[in-house]
Image (cartoon, rainbow, N blue to C red):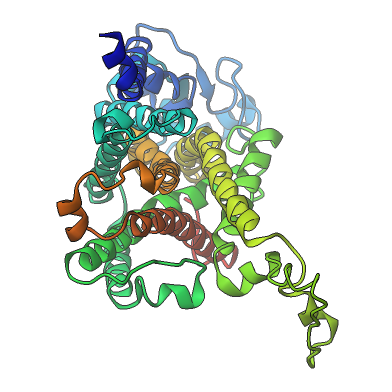
Length: 465
């Protein structure tokens, strides 16, 4: 019995770790605890009267709450007396701020799907991390090796996130019709790009080396994944760009209740810059700057020809890291970028909720008799679809981590246990390179979409309202 346990210790450890994580997350409600404390805003007609929550922002001169203009209560009363024809209800202009807890989050749409995806993803990532520290036994069988556990968990998690992204992208009233139409357009473009250029054309401009060329089912499947991610990630990236625009106070509104503090603002800046930097590391002309290709020729007295560009071109290929070290550096950067996106998740979510507050503030001061129906509806939708936005913000870094983890699994772990299947499937090295390419593709899409949206905001083509 002991010998059998020692033989199958790897799959037992993977299974035990996954079960412990699942039960711990379910018992302590860690996915909900991750969102605990976010501040949201509601109108008083949707506010329960039993818990006695106080208003955070109200019209001036009412019960001593914070005013939103410099006019005093006496001036407002004189103004109301002189203009009796204006029908404006002072009570409808107030809103309430509350901190989200377990009771509030349980009523949100997609809360169950979020908890399942969060737990499954953490179990898969933990199993992938455990696999890197476990020693494989000598001449193991396929089940004794235990590598099938993190692979199956990762595939199940990837399937869950892909189906959830497809569902939330086309959820009714969760996004604008134009955004959904653009998502379909980008998805179709990504599909055709995958069919035409992947994997052969990728090696021309990107530093990916696919071992074999595939046709038929696997080519269509890979192109479909590229197109799906191109379509599904447009709306989340656009929302993230609006959160960045609002959180870093690009509007210059100088309202501390809407923008981020200095620490959260630094996280948003670092996240945006680092994602763009990581996306550029696989582009061949830029990647060559960081790689020293002539490291072995220096000891042989090799020389570099001088061109019309002078000494600048001599630096390319002669300074930098070794190719192997640069590959590890890029993977670490990809890991750090994903973790930084997860750290920036809560500031992005808070800015998503504050976007409804900004809409209320703008319409409150837009006219003497403001129409707050739009801001009331926007505030309701931002509260109702909070967990949907959480799924959209959390999906990209989790997908990158899962693909990155799969790309680091040793191909010898599978061995030649199933020669019949190995004749049908491409080589395992091809799957590892595809996983690394998809991890970069998700990062590249997030960087390009968010950067373009920010550029459109900068030129006043788009605006936050």
